[in-house]
Amino acid sequence: MSTDPKDTIDNFARDMQWGQALQLLEDTSQEGPGPHPFYVDEGEVLDLVVRLSEDSAVIQFGLERVASA
Image (cartoon, rainbow, N blue to C red; front, side):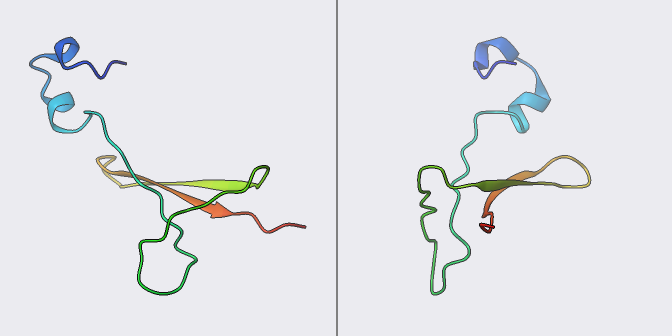
């Protein structure tokens, strides 16, 4: 897999969907107007939640805190 544009010249799927991307994660558990930064303490356990559209064209990532025992 490569993100170098020269490696995928004339590749429609790559040009339209699979370029480099960035998704910022926000803390949705905070109240009030957001977005709120998602701060993490060292050693804190998190669940990575991945959502994929039915046609596999859209993928979204989120973090959820795991309740301590």
